[in-house]
Image 1: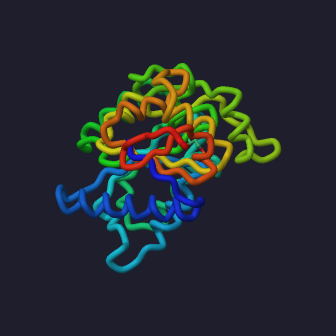
Image 2: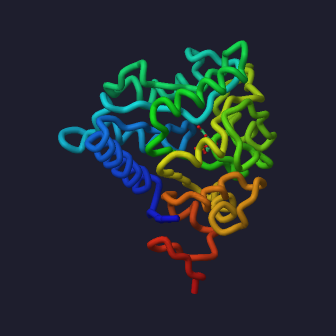
Length: 258
Ligand code: F6R
């Protein structure tokens, strides 16, 4: 695991934007396209803002990009302001020249959700797999909406959200707005098939989950700990998110802090 600690959220977002842009350029040159796995939530907003602000030779060419999002609430149509489809249009898709037919979101409105989940897996495979998957981490260690207890080999499926996740995400829902209790999420097994993973974590609220994910045992109780099994997992932390780590992590090596 390559773990990098940046001074603050801005530096983390800038570093993430550079890594994502470089990966889009590299994959586009090599294969003529790039398949990007996208996350939602507060953490990647700074990354998306920087991606759309880049110009000149620094600007990533989204005309060659296909995207697959990690998750979507069940029962929220894409035009609902709290849906992840809406989030992605607001923060990224409406600002880049990505072809609409290359944007893929899990379908939380399907009448047959299991069939829609299987179709999502097929679409990822047909696209040749995900080159770079952007990830956040829940304060309970969830990855996408794979809550504690999720099989480390799980596939795209419907997941019931924990009380902790519902409480953490309640801030996005206004008075009287119904917050869905279930979501469609890529599974941990699906995520682990991406060629590269880029996980971002910011703030003290993530410090314990980051410590458990990076330095604890690999366990379904902390779904993000599965990152330890990936050959190309790059983790970007700000100082606050790194504050509970017992080790310094440098160049893929962990040493006990002095
Ligand atoms: C969102 C997702 C979630 C978030 C996590 C952290 O697509 O997969 O796992 O990454 O809940 O959310 P924020 O960034 O809002 O703290």
